[in-house]
Length: 399
Image 1 (spheres, one colour):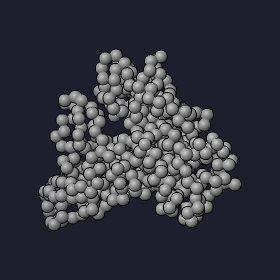
Image 2 (image 1 turned 60 degrees about the vertical axis):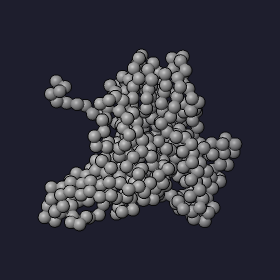
Image 3 (image 1 turned 30 degrees about the vertical axis):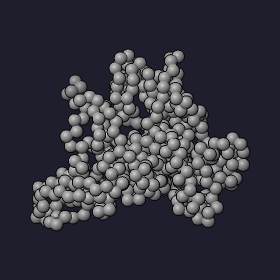
Image 4 (image 1 turned 120 degrees about the vertical axis):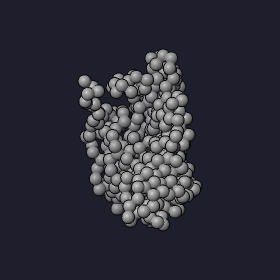
């Protein structure tokens, strides 16, 4: 018989729910089979930790005396978007500190940016706020310089347009001589190394490949805070190549997430500096999957050896938007430390931390077992058949 969210939540409240991680369920299913596992397992926890550039936060500073309507503003010299109400602003993870040399002295170091400010806020550190205004009758102040921290803010709400890519590229550099610097890190020439970015068998959307339980309204564990999915993520693409088990073999779905930063743990919110590219934010995310039926259980037992990712050349094919795939490799191969391309052994490394993902899945498991985290049924499904549109440039420059 199928289970319901209500039944599973009642078991969680009573401390009777059987919860395992997406790593643990693999062994359980292999030893006991789907039928026996389904009888006793209620929830499977999934997780990921890695750089997620499309992240940021809304902040409300409260009113100074006299009041100011901020038209330009900076936190620790990192610009924030203040074209909102008087003292509301949005801070993006990739915004750079004022006067950063960027890539003028290539590759740029990008030592501090929006992601680092977000980490400092969550850590409780004091941060300098500088704001300018043209002045109005009700907001006469034209310049403000002060110190704030997360406890002095009325709201600090993380609102991320794109997190938790369902799958992702494996980046290599096919150029014969030149090292390149990308958001996937440093790529050595002649495909000397390959970089991937996913937790594989622990990753949330790879355990729910057709979005049966993960949708708009789903509760999430976002860096220690309890938040939710508020929309499909930007670049959400569900029409893609898939295995016979319906697992995507390329980027696919994404999630838009939000949660209260005042409840977050700085261990899982880390500013990132990526030489030659810019700044970013590494986040830890956990999602619990209710085992409503056997098909959902079967999906959560996916293994690294059954998940494929495309190997893409970032020296030419990726920047020129060519669709060539060098080959597809499994996450089991990627996590072994090397893959084979054209009879050549290529060293692999990850932009995603599997140990952190494992830790997050275990934390979420414990919170559910203790009755501290209940599950939400999505009120809207993620788009199941959505393609990705490219930007076609038009105008005089292309004539």
